[in-house]
Image (cartoon, rainbow, N blue to C red):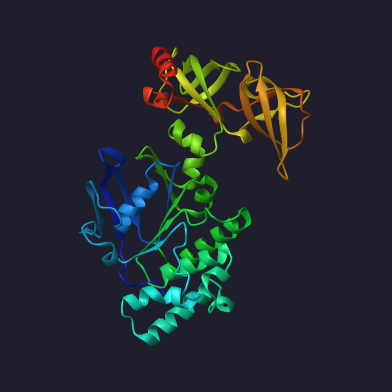
Length: 381
């Protein structure tokens, strides 16, 4: 099967926005997608990623902005005329139709000749490796098999764009891993252009050519998996890209991108300022668990960064251990370790200054706090 119908060079979203009853769900989304790309929209629940996908699909009208394909507006077209395929979170299969008939349904609605339907359905069934299950009903299939049917039903239409809305969220961990590889294989084999919504950063990192991180309906950062993994532009992106250790700190020194900070559990820690901060500012320190190291006896802390702590929890994760520690002030930190320290052990953590990132905080960062806590933070900031 070759995807050729309705081929395009670029899809552009310009100033795309969507509001519900005066509440902004998506604001000023600007994005250019090249044919053949795999784009992941990433963010927590309620960030606007599914709204963006539904606006693209034509299931929601835009409140603001335009969507064009090769400079031709499509946001004014009904969904059935956009030539897109969609894979839903809940599969949305017809329970009374066989696998073959589910896949054929869209082609029948488009009045494709019977012989071509038979050929394209057979190709799609083979692509998703369901030949032995072609006559079965969805209720006789596993979750992973049902998801394959949903994907086959989307790609059999030879769409110019495939939209996927958290398609793996209902599967167990092993199936999710298998289906991640399967979706990327189909994307490459068929030359698809795919936009994929997920809240799972590992899923997005492993599958996408570029990631779009959203928060509160606004784009925070767009870039390759490597760019976002290594260089998140603000602490919201860092939080979503695995920087589990987020701590409010006070900037006590600054020089050429390097800062000294103090905070709960940290004293005179040397770190890297990703955003402009000044001495006296309240900022947010972000460190990945894997970037902390437990200092072995006789070793020296890196860059003078030494954080004393007590081991509280040790979890076995196969080749490594996930360790939870408490600082003297009761702050919880997450660490990865090659060996299992004992619960109750006193340890010293260290981190390279380049991997301890410092970001600005704003009053918006405290919008979800209780009023009395927000007032305290506003007074501090």
